[in-house]
Image (cartoon, rainbow, N blue to C red):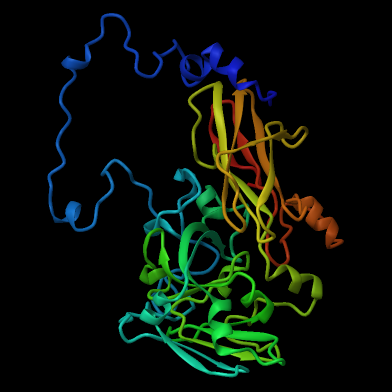
Length: 423
């Protein structure tokens, strides 16, 4: 079923990548080659031209042949009682690289809240509480201060494997990774001056049902960003325009959008966003802040079709709230053997890392999986290992307490169809 990863030079020398791997019948020509007797380049029909219009000049459109779209995410009714789409999932099955386009970035909302329409000229961020100098910052003030640009993922607590899910967009589409630009929260807090009793802070957004979350002040002084930029442009309204809080590695609900107020306090405050996201059991509470480590194969994945046996590059994403991903392993035989995958770029802290593994499929039914290890030594567990940790019996109905970072299997049938390994 699985095959050992061949040396790149030997693999390319064999020609399998271009000739024999992706077809059921006769070999097709390599890239840039034409079979004997075929039309020359000059005889090919000219492509249709894209008309230059306002949509191409004012804000560039993607090709009409690219059809990746977000979908309403399952788990809770959508539209909800207020007629709103609650969560929107990114199309990971079509993703390349590590950056999620702003237009395809996943979205999570506070229930019952409509998208605020905020004039950046009027918006203000107030910082008060246990500080020496309460201050209010305009967006222009924030842009005058020293900035940082960093790659970070965000993930919703609802991102998890499910027997009902058919695609990787269903199981893992509630995570995305973008390049964020803004001011370190520590810079703003130093301007205000922290009192000695300051141990927590509460971040509040501008939505109708006030989204607010409590976080340790140590996190604020470490790597939190008050972001006004996303992927080289302004943060989009669905992502918190004009400013949002980035809390690298923490569960998505802590990344407060439409940020308007930060209160520095001396105790944990139970807020709207915190209710239901923390547990009295300290083992659960510890898991409810930091994400991962987590990985998932995006190709081949659920509902995709392999045309036949031969060469494929298995590709996927890995991430962790514990830091950078250090190792990704792929199994092509249901977890019996694990093989080291290759990183497609240098993994960044609290960011998606793209991995690949060269695989020659023999056409037999099998199951493929990935697991990752982060820089602090955490290893992504299987569902069986999680059940053992909680001292609970394991079966297909086992529900993971807290955040679910279990290994996701994809089952490949002899006809090349790919389905959820938990189904």
